[in-house]
Amino acid sequence: MASLTTKELSGIEDQLGAEELLVKKFQSYAQQAQDQQIKSQAEQMAKRHKQHFDTLMGFLY
Image (cartoon, rainbow, N blue to C red; front, side, top):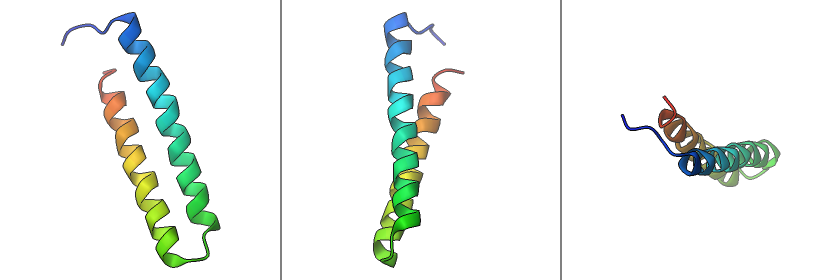
């Protein structure tokens, strides 16, 4: 695998932080939601952003 440039690593780091924040926000929304449909959607979004996070982490290994 080719080495990543400093700029690429910086971009991945920034995106990892953004994805991590989105996971936390959607998990919080899901916990607070009274409506089951909204709760389910928030949980799905948290899961999707966790997958994005995991994919980005894969570029670092």
